[in-house]
Amino acid sequence: MNDSRKDERFFDNPLVTGYPNVIFYAGIPLINPEGFSLGTLCVIDNKPRELTETQLDSLRALSNQVVKLFEFRKTNAMLLESQKEIQTRNAELEQFAYVVSHDIKSPLNNIIALTTILKEEQKEKMDETGGQVITHIANSSHRLKNLIDGIISHHIGVNITVKDKRVIAIDTLFKELRELLDPRCEFEINYKSELTSINTNEIAIKQILANLISNAIKYNDKDNVKVEIEILDEGSFYEFTIKDNGLGIDRNQFSKIFETFVTLGTKDRFNNTGTGIGLSTVKKLIEKLGGSIHVDSEPGVGSTFRFNIKS
Image 1: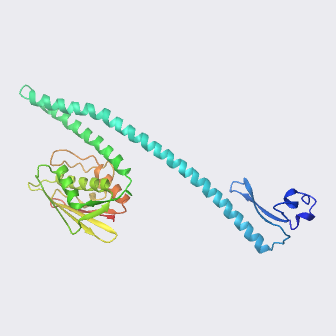
Image 2: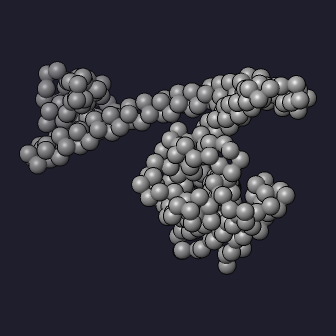
Image 3: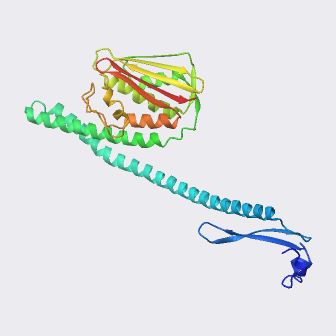
């Protein structure tokens, strides 16, 4: 409409005769991809105008952009709603995991304690078969307990907010890890680094290192267990190396050890088998920290795990 004052439909309209004095009007309907009308994009002026074809094309292009912005806003609202739902479900899952672990671990701990007492107090009265049954019950209970602990650790690990970084003193870090993994100082665990501290997520890096060092100790058949750790600063990354003199791993098994619930069936120095959760959790945590992990190993000689994380 070039001049609304000359249009019998609008010449006496209050918006024409008064503020904002709409003399010129051009509008493009806003239609979404499903064909629904969302409104109109309009251009007004208080004096007569004539739009060129180029200006009309620009107005149509602008209307398309407005529709896309509406669609993006709708999508964003749906994503926010989904995010809230996921957060709620995660909170419920965490509570469920806690309740389940508590309700299962409590009787398991009782079974373990009772079998230990029974084995010690009744060992002279039990025959060989009875002793084997009690040992099997105890071993199965320990394995189930380790599996539950592994699942809970995996759940906690993959839900860590790795953006929460802090400066961690390396001496303190390895002192705490040694107290946790080798309180009796039975093994040779050494580290070297020119760094005095690293800046990363504390919970994540402790869980990663604790798992790798623990595996280096457990899957080791040597009388003198050796674990060597090195940390390097590679600019935008920290690079970690954990080397041991343990059982080693066949090359064709390298990719399998990082899969969840996949085990190689190898018993550790304490006569237990793994749950297939630890290394998969380690891999996920490292990837969340912006890095990657690789292994090099030779059966009977030992393994070297190398991983990097963003600094």
